[in-house]
Amino acid sequence: MTSLAPELVEPHLTGGFGRPYLYRETCESTQALLDASQPEGAVAVCEEQTGGRGRLGRRWDAPSGSAILSSTLLRPPDGRRIAELALVGGVAAANAVEAALALTAQIKWPNDVLVNRRKVAGVLAEARDGVVVLGIGINVNQTRDELPADAHPSAASLRTTDGVVRERAPVLARLLAELERAYAKWIEGGIDALYVDIGPRDFLRQRRVTLNGLSGIGVGIDRAGRFEVDVAGERHVVESGEVTYER
Ligand code: BT5
Image (cartoon, rainbow, N blue to C red; front, side, top):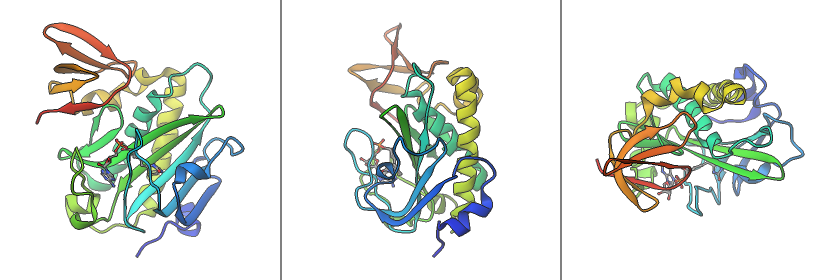
């Protein structure tokens, strides 16, 4: 089994993110290992989470040693919309997944990365004490049986997508390099500066969607990172929420 121990990951790091690199075999959640005392770009990684978190109190599950379970400490400037960081993480995860698979990845607003309509990565942005802890989970080597069976969208790993068992360390290093790049662009120019990475990957565009009590056709993610829905010819813009969609 491959490992994400520091001596295997640090040689692959190309930028500032991942320094320092906090590593544990087991933790409750990598989100709980970082706080405002850490510098921007500090990263926590575990092989296994006993209380892995999704959004809205949901769980994130992966067998020990099978996935990338990472959190990165960010210190965005005051006044920025924290929810946008889920999309920044989504861009980073989509780029890392595409580089590993040589297949295109889609972004399902606000925080999912899909390949072939299945979720291979999820992002969780949590603000506390003036910092943001950005959690990114990527399913790498899980077999079909090791993925949650009842998830919506249904779950996949890089392995169930192309049959390849991979070293996780280079995928993690790529993720951190992509996150550093995407975050720097976002600091400079907001979601608009990342739109080239988001617009063409927008999974919900033109799909029949329901969110926050609105049912309509997805117009897509806008240049501010919100989601637009066409409800009977009238456009609604949503800042955050849960989307259900029809195939
Ligand atoms: C997310 O939540 O997609 C955010 C996931 C963030 C996970 C990372 S791992 C490192 C860091 N530390 C943490 O504790 N969390 C972050 P959400 O959209 O709420 O999706 C959660 C739902 O996805 C669950 O209710 C399940 O149905 C499903 N799910 C659980 N584990 C999954 C997996 N490994 N792959 C795909 N779907 C999964």
